[in-house]
Length: 400
View 1 (cartoon, rainbow, N blue to C red):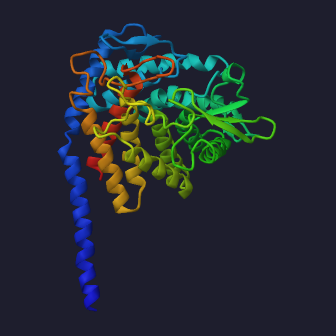
View 2: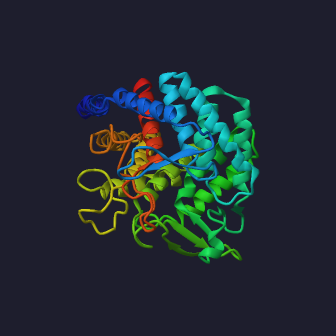
View 3: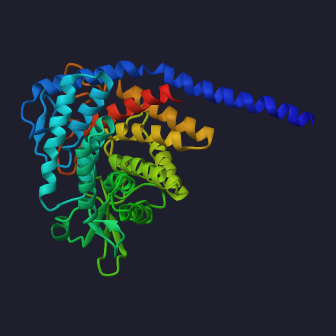
């Protein structure tokens, strides 16, 4: 009996300490201040744009204005997504008009045969957020159409979605699937639950399952690209396209994996997906450098000029916040939550916020280092996952 009496106070003391630590970490970070900053940046960008067919993509070093791209670019959905998040936070009518017009402008992508897997990025970030906030039924129909188009790239022999059709000939990859593609599964899961073909769920589940056994290495790092045979579907090899080497840990790829498998677990309840998300997250956090923001690749030689990738940090922050809500163990909840807040704290410093330097929210992201593209730049998807993570954190404060 004495042992039981001692255990009960200790248990509740442990819970209390854990809860207080969780709340303390949240209180230390002024999420509203950073959201206000993001809204101001979004309003400034909205006022500087006048062509709804051109979407902000990057601001290179020493530049101040956004370089833009067409709706067909894989990044086109991020700007309307940012506008939706900023409108949700502010209620600004200009941001609402901006969000609507840029969202509706990406619909033209569905008029042509699909050339790659990025429909989730393009449509779920734009139309998905738009539907979430407005309930506009036309947005829902476009999302369902986009999901069906994405599903056309699924190869049942392999069990995954073809990422880059043009790379079949260009690189000699019969069927290629990249880790980024895990991010597009959310569109399929959503569509299957909201009036779309139920097979979309099976496609997303199959894709995540096959990538778990091919793109995810035994050491809990990820390949960028998995190459498969189309005759019997077997895994041929894992390679890189944007990382330092075929065997290296490309920073953004690792975070695509954390985010994607967190979503896969949320949608399926499959503990295997949770296990993968945890292992990828633990490896990412374990290998972070002293200042807490990853270099573009964890295995690239580090010199005074090696660029960081703030975009990888923003993706990780958003993913870790959601992962913390799905965990049942208090210790893991707290670990991932605290790690996310730490990343956001560092990203919100003068070292990574652009301030008056340019129209973007953040600086120091890296797009495609091997190709010499978007190195140490402001990139639109870094801003998108930054404001998404901040929005998630604010909602967690309201509903812990």
